[in-house]
Length: 257
Image (cartoon, rainbow, N blue to C red; front, side):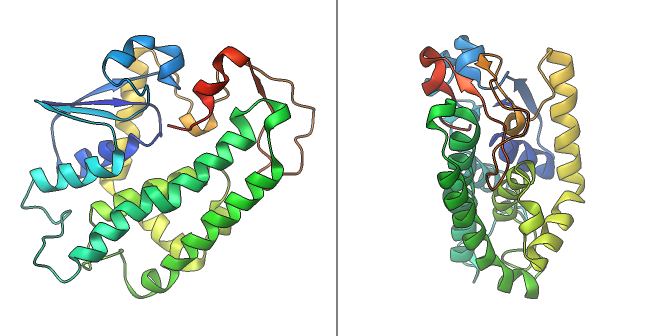
């Protein structure tokens, strides 16, 4: 049976959502965020200390977009996968990786320099620049989504799961208010899917059963952080909370995983 190592609403939500859409059986191991700080034993599973980690027999994976492709391919035939002979096969692969490489990456920089770095290293300019980066690239989806319900092949696919997670992360950063109209409607459609709703319920249920915090990973101010924020957060684009991190742990919080 597939085992998925997951933090609440972190990148590992992608394979969780995929498995719920596909109706697969799996074991969900919930981890405190970030696991490389709060559960050092996890390094034996994934030396990177990041989530997700997916184990399926002899297969071990650590990249969430690759997991989406793997799960769709191994579970065929399924409408979530676009076959090589289909016209939109190239578009499918492009959007599948666009969700992580182009839409999620800039948001991790926003989190790093708006929240996880010590106050002296936080940078409102970096937060603003990478927020604009994300929104500019997200706008490129507007023409496609104004004409089609989903990104490719005229159906919901793994590519929508990949991009959908980037929109979930953006909603935690308060960026959904700046989505263009078609992207907003698309994000609302994704949230209404039974598979998406089941994924939210599954992670909450597993967290409660395993004694892990229900706070979504993008919203976490880690326990090792000593907050020194003024009463009013500085006027950054996202008004993210100010915090400092001890030097011994700072590197562990530099990436959002």
